[in-house]
Image 1: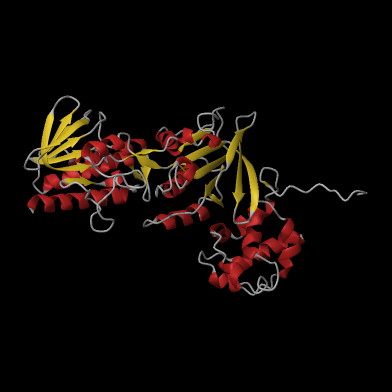
Image 2: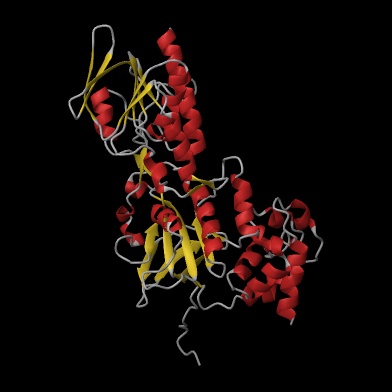
Length: 338
Length: 108
């Protein structure tokens, strides 16, 4: 009898490793052909600019533990309980897995920027998302659609966050610091470019974040404008004309950008709703999985023996995700030994 | 001649592409700490001139950074260079040197 974990992203891998080390047998289920989840879309991590690939390699090495059984390209399709409370999960390949506890680590997906149509993603050529910028960093190449090095770049915060118009009232927490990190990376590649961040509030909550913001301003000459993008349009040279209010001076502002990067927020993972209904869990007001108590039950759901970790319950940065996974491992160990 | 009392309002929008950002560049070079402003308004709250007049140093330096130098001409001389703003700034901006840099530019 073992612990079943759904999702082999950072949270799932870390929890699996900690549980295995404490003597539990783990069945780790991942829908994709490789582990890592959203970590696979990142190049360098904040705040220390660690290579995302290095962290993934470490996670992968950890789950080579003999007590962990990895099921790639697998999805749970049915859930049931036996009389003694044992959990049974049927996978899409027909396999039946049983466990004493189930941990949901299904994570998040990034906001689909097409939904903010007024920002022009998918319509204008030089509007990209923060995820696409990470991929450009991996390839060490930043060009506009017309093949030029961009002279002025704007990073737009809060795309898919704190916005009633797309039913996302919450803050995704990591876009501000991602924008600062990406602005610094852009500066290193393009020493002459003008780089501006358009923000509503700078939410630099983590250790080293505010320091990074300060360094971005002073050392890397990144400019910060407090104002939310209202709309963008395109000129004949495929540049973008944007309109914001410079709220700290109280005047509308317009400018032309060669490249516009949308800092996309976090949404519940694909399949989140089906998982909630299959496992009979509760949906939190933000659409993620509801935990049983915001202080003492952050890894517990309203179902006995079913636990949650990482971005399945709310947006989290990687530091908090890994910490939360270790917390989930402790919570599950306590449950199994009680 | 304006016979009918109508006039055309000047656009309020900051036209960043067209604005002359020479002063902004000078300020960034001469006073690098000026780039650290986060717009908290501590300087303006404590400002002796700002308590008695329309003078708003936080706003003026932000306008200067966008190339909006017009207001500086009428406002900047109100500063008495007392340096209280320097004492309260949480980001360590050398505000007095920044004002001095702007004054030199508009007087030149």
